[in-house]
Amino acid sequence: MTKADLVETIAQTTGLSKKDTNVVVNGILENISRALSDGDKVELRGFGSFKVKQRRSRRARNPRTGNPVDVPAKLVPYFKASNELKDKVNSNTTPVETI
Image 1 (cartoon, rainbow, N blue to C red):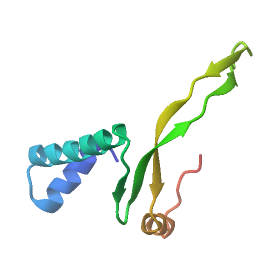
Image 2 (cartoon, one colour; image 1 turned 45 degrees about the vertical axis):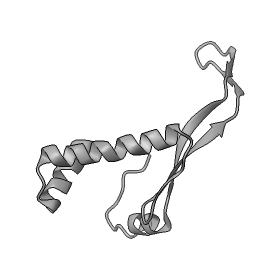
Image 3 (cartoon, rainbow, N blue to C red; image 1 turned 90 degrees about the vertical axis):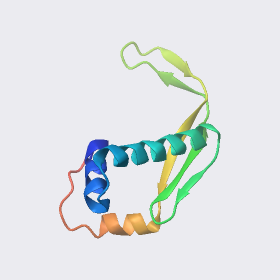
Image 4 (tube, helix red, strand yellow; image 1 turned 120 degrees about the vertical axis):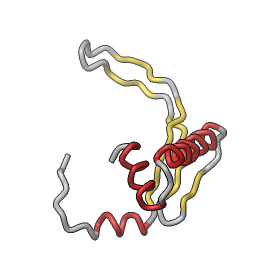
C-alpha cells in the first residue's frame, strides 16, 4: 500500500476529500518525523511505537574490494509493532511472499 492508496482509502471511509485527507496524512507523518528527530518516542496504541536507537560505530568490509571500512555511530528510527498488530498480521490466512 502506498501513501496515495492510504489517502484514498481514508477518504472513502471518512467522506473527506482526497485533498483534505492528504493534508491530514502528511501532518501525521510530519509530526511523527519531527518527534523522532527531537528524540521523543511516538506510541500509537494498538499499532506500535516509534523511537530512535543509537547504532554504535563498527568496522565493516567493502564487498567489492574487501578493504575494511569504518562505519560511524548513528541514530536510526526503530518501529516496534504492538501485540494487537502482530495478532492481526498472524491471523491473516492468505499466503505471504517469503523473502
